[in-house]
Length: 394
Image 1: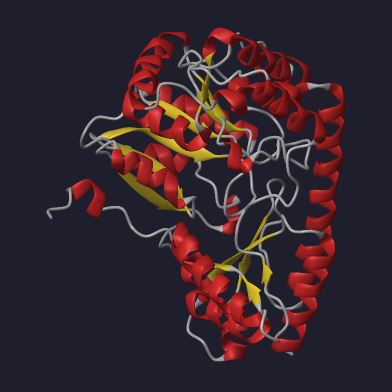
Image 2: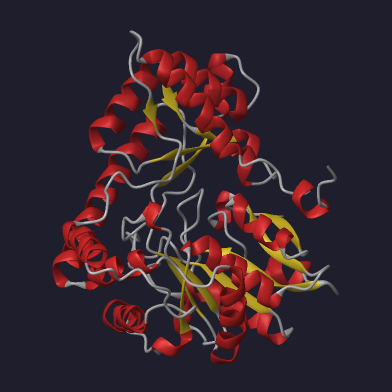
């Protein structure tokens, strides 16, 4: 059977390949060895809070499972609009918000609406691998530009200006970022957008970790800059609804009907039950619980990053958001006699029973020397992982 060229261009998602190996080792561990500690997948250990679960149960019992508008429940769009007003001081009309089947669908819709075959989208290296594949699926080309720790692993306006060519259509950024947990300086983001706008380009910003920001300098939405910025967000991370597959887009007004047509044809509407449940995310009790969890994620970061640094797995930039540690593993590779972070990740799985993610997924500019830890696990798990790593690396 002949496979389409676009499918052949999509690389494996190595995070999941490593996860499969870790799960296989974990099954062996269940037969007498110490259990695997999973620090490889970026999924909160918290689930949807009680009011959200109760809202889902009520929706099921009431039979509220029919299709909604392709843009989502009007009530949910209004709740999201109010959240921007209350938490970010932004007036984002509900008419600009499109609820989607996860942030993945949001990115797919934005790319299909705006990218032509042959268009080039500038992205930082390192960055989340699936984002560049959404560009590729729209027959565009993701051009990754090396971004080191001296610039917080984020693109600069000068780099965007220098890299812009005849085929360049725009930029796809993430703030805070996966895998680094770093955000773009607000003034620099404004300068990037000015460069893009001057060239009639598009600025897409992945803000799915925006709610999990720990530094006042960075916890601001790019939407404060200009209504022409396209923001991608999600109920998965801050709102702890990973498997519910619900996200949203904030779009310039003229783009809403275009994205609506695409959504109607690609998946009709997001999960109706998930939307009814998500209404309860914005109740005061739920928001208070989310803030408590945000404080817990910060406490985990504040323990784990210094502990990694002491082990020689140095995070060159303190993450200001999300729940990741992007650590230079050069010293650990030398100690264990392995070549790079790919081999190190398997060594840590096999010898310490700690599952981590090698840098291979996230780009090619020096990523072989970096390894990603997820700090989404409970503090006792992180403490146990540190002790295992200390024992192995000493």
